[in-house]
Image 1 (cartoon, rainbow, N blue to C red):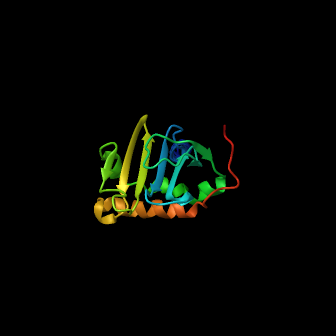
Image 2 (tube, rainbow, N blue to C red):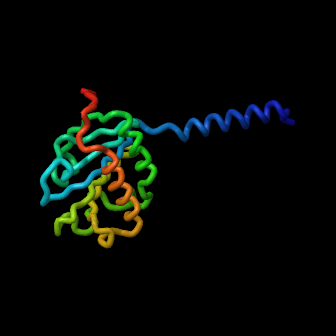
Image 3 (cartoon, rainbow, N blue to C red):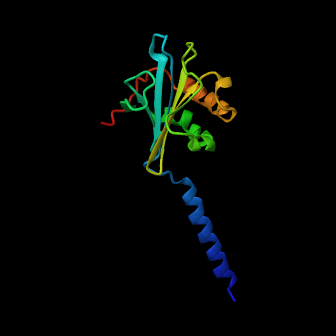
Length: 165
């Protein structure tokens, strides 16, 4: 028969191990998100960000609708804190969608579009979404709102850019 002390030790050890496991984020995972407008001028027309290793990065290339041409620079931790929860709001169904799928007709009539890229378990998937909620599956609408809000929370150009080499 197991003593109460041994049972208590087993339960506490199990709780400690599982609690720590929840906090771990794999180093190779990231989320890239942004928006683009083709018939537009100014800094806010193309905004692309990456969340990786509990940091926020901004793309300086600002390539229209690009899924591969990025040059990320680190932003202050305070900006990461503003948008870090967006990684928890990614719809589970999105990962099951075809890679490089285009939802709707992004920016076809100057409404703009969203760029989403996920990297997990050694695999990268990307999607382009129409900004018109009627032209994408319903399960994406809340996430699109979250992307919009996250981009608005990050001030235009940071004076405190981190040089991470």
